[in-house]
Amino acid sequence: MYIGIDLGGTNIVAGIVDENGQIKYQESVPTMNERTSEAIIQDIVNLINIAIEGYKIPRKDIKAIGIGIPGLVDFKTGNVARCVNLNWKDVPLASMVENAAKIPVFINNDATVAGLAEFEAGIMKGYQSGILLTLGTGIGGGIILKGQIYDGAHGVASEIGHMVVGENFYDCNCGKNGCLETYASSTAIIKYTKKLMVEDKIYSSIFEKLNGNLDTLNGKIIFDAAKEGDAVANQVINRMAKYLGIGIVNLINVIDPDIFIIGGGLSKAGTFLLQKVREEVNKNIHYNTIATGKIELSQLGNDAGLIGAALLGKHRN
Amino acid sequence: MYIGIDLGGTNIVAGIVDENGQIKYQESVPTMNERTSEAIIQDIVNLINIAIEGYKIPRKDIKAIGIGIPGLVDFKTGNVARCVNLNWKDVPLASMVENAAKIPVFINNDATVAGLAEFEAGIMKGYQSGILLTLGTGIGGGIILKGQIYDGAHGVASEIGHMVVGENFYDCNCGKNGCLETYASSTAIIKYTKKLMVEDKIYSSIFEKLNGNLDTLNGKIIFDAAKEGDAVANQVINRMAKYLGIGIVNLINVIDPDIFIIGGGLSKAGTFLLQKVREEVNKNIHYNTIATGKIELSQLGNDAGLIGAALLGKHRN
Image 1 (cartoon, rainbow over the protein chains, first blue to last red):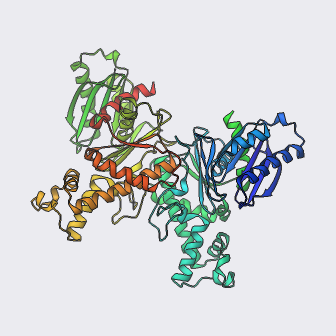
Image 2 (cartoon, rainbow over the protein chains, first blue to last red; image 1 turned 60 degrees about the vertical axis):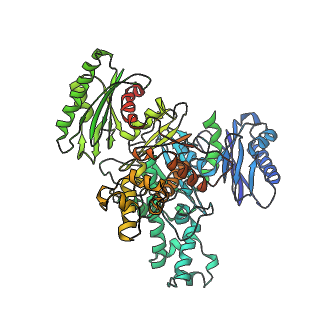
């Protein structure tokens, strides 16, 4: 058995997960990310103890604890290098939890562990290589090569949201222009919808849906409007799919995996989004005699982060 | 001992190469690429025999023959899938040479084998992962991960010249817009120089250098003019470096190797280009506490193609 922790900006989820990636027990608390890292880490330790007691499992039967973090790990120090949402910089998360819990602790990026979950227990099962793109507030990436997590030489591989794929009307938080996440995250499609409606003054049914209050706009509302035929929403989603297509073709031209997986909150748009992305990819492949990676939707959805975190220990042992 | 063949659009070079990547014997003939694939392959077989006789080595002491091709290999069939310069499509190069020479034959993309050469005998020696970018008429890529050639699941990985990094004023041969090779190949910088001089009518010392005949413009002339302070040439090279920087940062964000190597004809511009590229990469790295890959110039230059082709056999055995 393994314990997984999905450390998010909103909630901390802890779970007991078996070797096959089945969640056996689950508990969560709000992150309250304005607190210190020490307070949040204390909550993680408490959740671990609650899970062990709640599932009534002897502590010695837990092989490892895995934590998926919304940021970058510095594999040289073993510390969390940076979590923008939590305002963490160089936090020794793994060693602090390990000292308290007396169980080996492994940490990795949340999208990377979600990729591992899809490989071990989801849509990537049976493939040797795959890339998961998590489309949420930003865009994360998880890369599996030869059946293993691929972290790169300095642990910064798979930062797919910051791959430049075009030239955009606004800069990315990272300082660059044209990052994939400025085209295909929920932040990006909200921004582009507002630009069309407010700046370019184009009418959209979204205005009525929100009773005129654009501050409550979110990705789901845009996708719903697009499915209903709203022109602005369709322009937004088609642009998102265009750049996702470019991003995936870039990844084919560089990594060429067996399979791509679309995950994260926006993937709930389902085949409506998937079909558009597949079409854009097909348009941009310049060698048509050779097969390239399949493109599918995530199978584990929200559970991927928890399952993948837990299975970090299985993967490292 | 190994035999390497560097099959280019202009020349076919054959050589006998030892285990350490030292060239012991070398011979070449013009490719005359308007001929049939059969005629060109016959020349390759003849060159192999000439090399064996010229170096006076018993045929049984040649462990393998490796061929670097200016195109894509279909690893499923073992055939050359496509060589645009040679007008080849689905040519069974390896099996035809193997049948004639009675020695095992391995083939791979020319930039990939050049990367292998730098790994075995050049600037990448001692590193576990690296990416070679060959800046020539187009841009090729060679990826080494965990000490091995990385081809991807369908053999189309490392087509780095076709990674989209911006939105450009002309389309790539592949049909897409914004491919790295439309910014940073010799074709690209010639095109942009002409655009500035002819379309935008900006004065450049290049006009005098060429006695007014822009048809003879090449990469070296642009770099020479830039080094002498010509404003147009500097604008062109700075733009090239900017997009090379974006391309390398994309590769850091996706693959994160130990080292990047700038090779191909344009790399003869040396530290003048290297410094600019390093500055552009540093500008675009958004996590400054973690080290990222070094960026260096190719060490083996023109010989990399021959040496790497020869060492394909060492690598596969």
